[in-house]
Structure formats: C-alpha cells, structure tokens
Image (cartoon, rainbow, N blue to C red; front, side, top):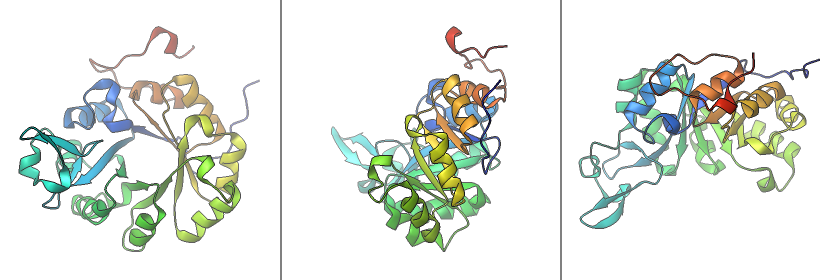
Length: 252
C-alpha cells in the first residue's frame, strides 16, 4: 500500500529550476532559463546582486574579473559587468512571465529593484523573495504582492520550529525553505498548521522529489528539471539536453 500523501497548500509542488536548471546549461544564463521553461519547469530560481547603476543582475557570486581584479557588481555599472550576465528584465523578456520566479536576495539592497522589475513585467504576483535575513523581507512585505520566503535551517530556529512558524505567520513570511534532507512529514504538517508554505532545496533525485511530494511540500528546487518533474508526477517535455541517469528513470 503506497504511503499516505499528506495535505499540502500547493499541489502539485512548484518545480523550481535551480539557477535556471544548471544541469542543463550554464548557471543563471538566459539560454538555461529558456531551456528549463521549454522542459516544463513551473518555476525558475536565480540569485540577484545590484549593479552600481541599479540593475538587478542574475549571478550566484556577484563578482566579475575587471582589469585583472575581482570586482563586486556593486562597484560596476551594468555595461562594465558585461552582457554575459543577464539582468532580471532580460530574463523576463526571454522567458515570459508565466512561471513562478524565486529570487535569492544575495544583495539585500536589491529588493526594491527586483520588485520593480517584476512589477514592470506584470509578474509581481509570481515573485518569491528569498533571504535568511528577516529584516530584508519584513521591510518590503507591505509594499508588494510578491511572496516572502525564509531560507534557513532547522538548527537556526533557536526557539524551535513551532515558535518559528508562529513568528513567520505574525511577520507575514509566506514560506520556509529548508534543505531537502531536513524535511519530515511532521515538520511540514507543523508549518502548514500555521498556513506557511514548505519549500525544499537541493532536490537532485527522483526518489527525493517523490518523497517530498508525499510529505506535502509546496515547492522543490533542483538542478535537473526532468528529475523534479518525474518526482512530482509530471513528465518533462523532451529536449536535446533533457536526460536522466539510468538509475534515475522512474519505475513503470
């Protein structure tokens, strides 16, 4: 008898392509984002830093080699950073606005510019702002229809998960994002009791995605779009670079 699937607030869970689906192309590249969308991802994930002239730049580390030195994006204009690093507006132009978008605010000061770009694109309602710093999220929460996501770990919940969930609810934080290995069905049920969404990152295998779906999670982040979709029961659209290891093929 299959395990009972716990209730979730979002069914099926959002399949977020981590850094655009880095198993299928370069991190945070427009071509990778586009490929993930074509494969059937229902969400994209990226990291954001602000350039000196105020552009939200999509990159994990937020530094670039310039004149022989590693320079932070905050010290360079968008033009100096170079065309290989896309802006958030360029991502929307390339991929459209139908997908959920999870943005890791590596630079907390980028939040207003990220919200502005999403609003201009008509995608603010599908924007998820992620940070481990609650102040950043709470400061902008009342000024946007975007969702706020607490990216954390269980060990950082010094007051315990139940009080943490209660504090999230009071502060208007919509979701908690934990490493996949830290989730249990009981923990998901606890956060759902406070009507907080449950996300998991580092979901790299079908069996892990399936287990998390059965726990009732609402969003999964992984590098392999095809594995995420297979795990939640949605087949990926075939593309040239879509693949699964033989050991990861879903059972029939």
